[in-house]
Image (cartoon, rainbow, N blue to C red; front, top):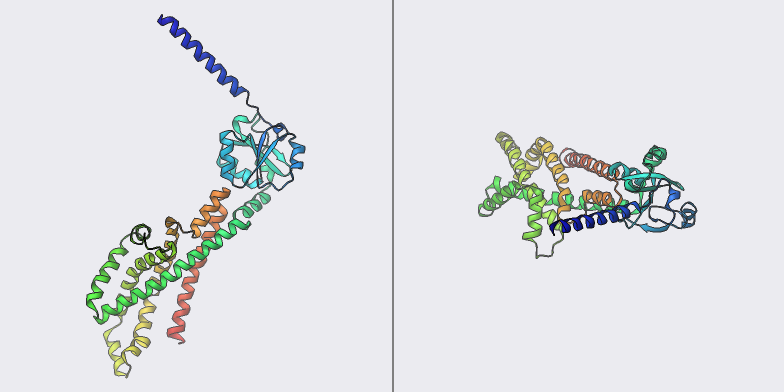
Length: 355
């Protein structure tokens, strides 16, 4: 009895395997775009009338896609048999995903299939595209098209707004703390406030931003940009306060007394004698802290703000082009860092040298 049951199980297994192998063998293999007749073909960034495509692939069922990921999800799921894409997308797909291969040219575009559906994998090479056309298409896809350019401009605007107002807030808060520390005024306010700022400065800025957004201001209705300004302003003021206090105190007592002996009032002594020396010696540290603040704005993406880094990530997700947007974002950060140093030098000269 047991032998008969075992024999029946083996026979059923054989039937199942035979059916599976038969189904797999029914999948049509492709070696050229002409073989895609009657196939389901996805189109991405293809600016051609379908009549031209029908001449190469008569009877094919075409479907247009707006995003790279959706097309290749359908390819993986078998909802599409092949894809026709531009040269840059073809290079990205076959270079980063070895599961896809090129099978030929379609009116200046390129046909891609999964390697399991390709009959001759070495028949067509991406090198036939040409390096200039490849880079031109990558540039258009990662920067010059309307969506990518719009994302980068909005990201730049968000980054500059967060940095500008966070820097002003940090400088004002640090100046107030420095004044109270030097003049020994409002001690009951200065001591707890300086302690809070010092403690918060020891917390990573990304954690501080997330804590403020998801805990402190969760029910306040404040936008992520405002929360970023508050968090980064408080974080940066902790270091600026120490820089201001140390460099002002380093100005010799004899210079203060000399200024008073010359008939200068206290405000004039600070304006013409103390602050110019203190700011001149602290300028490198001040520039470094402001550049650190600029880099910290890249954490705004953690609280759903579309800054420069978030914009580059969105472009990469939509187009699978990472190099061009990341290169542009890096150059923008370098330019902004240079602008910070130049602006500080201009302000110093305007206020204390030529003022």
